Amino acid sequence: MDADIARASQAGDIEYFQHQLKNDVCKRKIIDYFHPKSGDTVVHYASRNGHVRLLQHFAVEGFSLEITNFDGKRPLHEAAHAGQNACVTYLLSAGVVVDPLKRADWTPLMLACSKVDLYVVQELVNHGANLKLKNKDGWNCFHVAVREGNLDIIAYLLDCDSTLWDTVSLNGRSPLHTAALHGHVGVVRYLLEACHYVTDTQDSCGSTPLMDAVREDSIGCMELLIHMHCADVFKVDNLGRQCVHVACQTGSLNSLVCLVETHRADQGIHISPSGAMCLHIAAKEGHVNVISYLLQKKVNIDAQDSKGRTALHIAAGAQKADCVRVLLKHGASIMEDQTGSTPKQLALKPEVTQIFEHLEKT
Image (cartoon, rainbow, N blue to C red; front, side):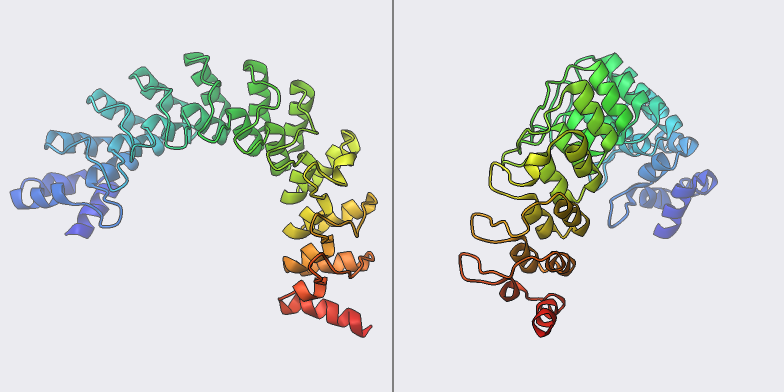
């Protein structure tokens, strides 16, 4: 019977339930039913799939509209997350709690802001949803809307509370960081025009919104932040890395070229305040295209870090065969680092060791 209960509730088969609920034994089974993995009940299924007539029938039969599954999600969470307008409206009109917390974390409003349905957001707010509640990461509904890049919802939330932009997560990240990291050019422009963000606000790791735009390799976000926000391309994070080092770490070649060619950040490609060189960073992460570009810019291919390691040492130790090939092709020296190790000795994978063995034979 369990399979029939699940199927009927997901399909909105109200005739099935009208018949089964006449039998007290069957009714008890339906009320007690839950999915063994998720804990979803028939009320969750009906809410998630938009079966408002079935939801109303369950309520008349005495089913709880506040029941939770194993994640702590109530029917309102399901309806809001799935964008089921009619179910959201009915549940709110039936008097369910508007701000229940899923595992003390997400509210229905936060889940609604992760989608594109403005109506659901408006319904929740009109019924008293708290816009400033935060989840365990310190995000409120505005952070969520910004992450998804929905300008209609973002603008509506700011109309409801003009201070929502002025908030940070537990790791110090602002909504502007989030928009830049996800490459939402339109949202970045809107936030810069409508809000009052401090230039180069840093999160707990020292990252700025510009650094996040570089991570996403979003030239559009970068240019907005630099021209509208006067973002500093030479700002350093907690590890002493500038934007060019972030670009080399993430393989964001377009951003690197833009920083060097357009914004004159070429000094940073040679060495950072912490001593980390772009070539070393790119070699460690395996970004061959970045290595090739840096070599075109005449960086020192045999430059050593504080441990005497060259980019070739780094690439070999990280088992990045393609990077080893391109560095050797451009004349990288096979020298010892401060421990007396050569790049070949650091190579462990056969595809890397074979490169050095072939070089020795030729």
